[in-house]
Image 1 (cartoon, rainbow, N blue to C red):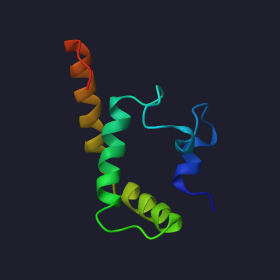
Image 2: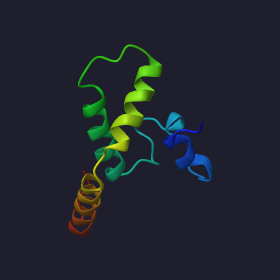
Image 3: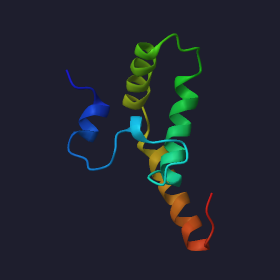
Amino acid sequence: MMDIFARSHQNSSRPTSGHLTANSPDLNPVDYRVWGCLQDRVHQKRVRDADELKQRLVEVWSHFSQAIIDEAIDESRKRSNEGTSF
């Protein structure tokens, strides 16, 4: 069964998250905000291995609020209009 991350990149020309580095030009402020929030939630408890990490990412993402993403987009637009970055 294909997980939600694989499905989201199945038809995408963007590299998968495994190919992006923390300083990748393919990441934008919205990506950093969303991944930062995911990371905080996933690592509330210690992760034992890669399988548990994958499981937690899927679980957290499935309950992730669209409002967080919308807020990140709005903040990015606001900063862009002000001529500032992060």
